[in-house]
Figure 1 (cartoon, rainbow, N blue to C red):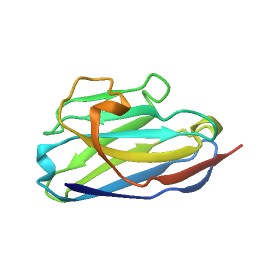
Figure 2 (cartoon, helix red, strand yellow; figure 1 turned 90 degrees about the vertical axis):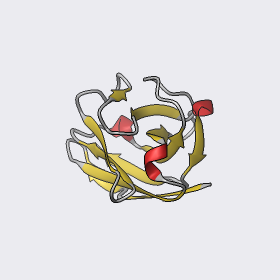
Figure 3 (spheres, rainbow, N blue to C red; figure 1 turned 30 degrees about the vertical axis):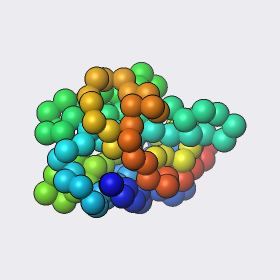
Figure 4 (cartoon, one colour; figure 1 turned 90 degrees about the horizontal axis):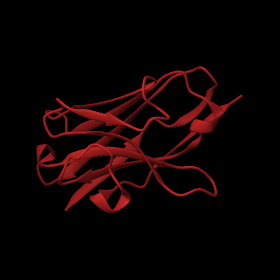
Length: 124
């Protein structure tokens, strides 16, 4: 079992930045591929970014590529999502997730464990 706790969400103006954090506990953090997903009101949960176990490989959704950066600190059991140039359409609950296999674009069903989410609101 892995427990995931997100933090860092909040209200920000368009063009601003936020950094989300997700701290893991339970089984060894380095065992897992880590990802970020988001779910806007009335929409399905969608993939945002993923990072492999060592942190050497990442993959992003087209909608965030060049603006968001995923990273991990295996010594701190934490994965981050740096979000720059935020847009109102980035408003969503952001979820951290842990999975077993890295394959670039990740689906909801590819992830084994989920956090409870943190709300990001971008005002225009």
